[in-house]
Length: 259
Image (tube, rainbow, N blue to C red):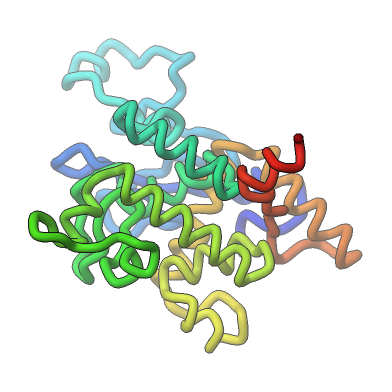
């Protein structure tokens, strides 16, 4: 992370997020202005308001702007309070608890992956909230049947979140708690990260993806990213260039230990 993870002044240092809402109302985020649709949302950790991104709800929009079009949620508000069904929210909480993951990190991942669109399908065939490839979902027990293909089943948020969070948890373990490497593997495949010498592959899409998710995560939970930076720096005795998540034991293990 060249911008966010500098160890200079905490998680907010250098943090920049751009975004836009497409015609279907789905948010898209990036760490750079990919094209003319993207507008600056966060600069150096400070939320920036614009006509399209009324993020700071403490400040009312000017009347001329507020009356120009129907009210619409700010892009970061969609990340802070994702438009998920009660069933999906329950599935997310349970998956985070089961695998010792931070809900805020999963929110950031889903925002970057699908914009919280349960029916999203990528050009490569990844499906749903967490944009899982059907072949990956099959590794985690999602099976086709006489009524539905694996791809169709992945449009069910409960199935998608259960398989996707388990996969991400396994990637965190594979890469010894490195959130950045786990995200890179989630985007480009674990093989690509291994071939890159257990570094983020030199793919523009993957580099952009990792930065974007981490910047959204830092917006949602700056204290968590700051703790990761501090822990990484203390282990190496120098400013952190990677962040690591201390993975909590699965819920079953925690419950057993409490007995």
